[in-house]
Image (cartoon, rainbow, N blue to C red; front, side, top):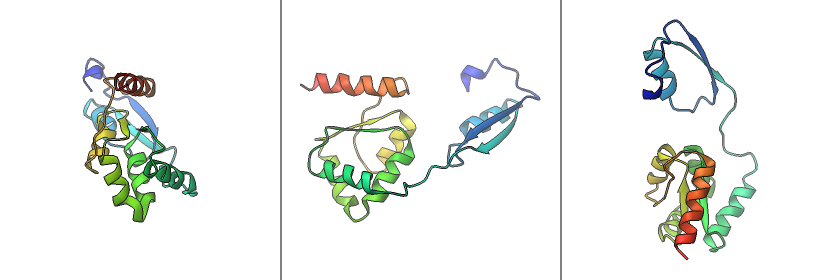
Length: 143
């Protein structure tokens, strides 16, 4: 919240549309600065109703048909392994072999990847374009 430190938020009301599974750093920081925070569940982050596309990705990973995997949120990490179900251990072991590059959008998603004891890379700027640039840089460097 350093970037917002110079702002006077005392008495301000700030609405945050988000998923309720989101971290509380932003609302807590805003409250500490004097703002009243209204949280509104604007979408739900859940496991997909149709797991077939994810199961197809898991099969492609295990068949060495994937060069890189990008993760843009902790939930994408956890859902991949939840859907893997009985193949979870095999998937983790395969990814540990470092044949497949794992790219995290940033440190929070990286912590979720680390829960599975997997190596990953991340850009210094936490955006999708920066993540893709990092992936391409690493792929070109590894050639």
